Length: 119
Image 1 (tube, rainbow, N blue to C red):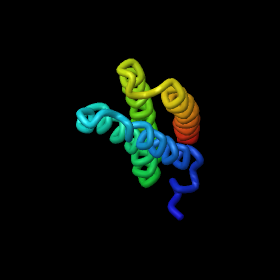
Image 2: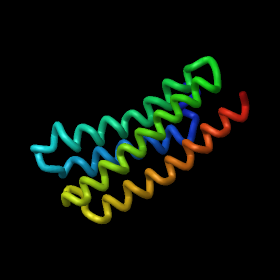
Image 3: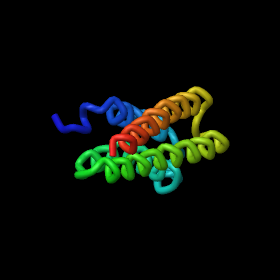
Image 4: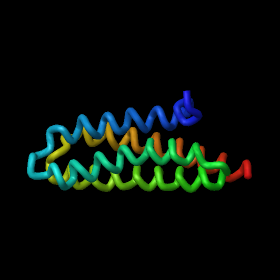
């Protein structure tokens, strides 16, 4: 098992990407290269940056990748608002995404702060 696979935040990021993929499956086909693609790529970026950062040799380097992962969560939040306003996401799906994003953002902030303080 790799170091990042043991992290709760990485595991939550995988679930978050699953949720985004499921939610965007019902988007209109003309959004395949728009919001669908953007939201999926951003959600995958969260776990990918955690994994990549864990392979760096210093905590400050890892913390930088955690910051990028955090920014990707914020990207999905913004895109979720647009999708909800366009009625691509129903209230339940929107609320689920936002709740998961909030938890993930807090976990990423905690990891970043931990990495910075252990320099």
